Length: 137
Image (cartoon, helix red, strand yellow):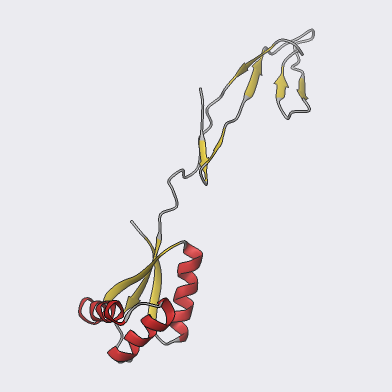
């Protein structure tokens, strides 16, 4: 049985040697080789076998979203300015996002790694906008 764990595009396999229990006095002999392989049972009586182990979440890390929410405080022209200043969006895109915030109550203004989106939210907060991070579904 084989288990492959995805870790950032890398592959990891575990090899466990399973041997006979017992020996001269009914005790198992356990030793660790220099390669880190554990031998269970009398030395020389082991046979390699791959054992499947349950893994944790193997889904790829989905993108995270920065969402700006409508608020009763900031002017539409100011929100447009912030989108241009923070994200470098051209005026047309910044205005479209601002209108989404105004009419729909929210707009996704960026997506990417969680740390980047958290940084963007902090910057938007420093400009006085209401913003949150959400995992893309």
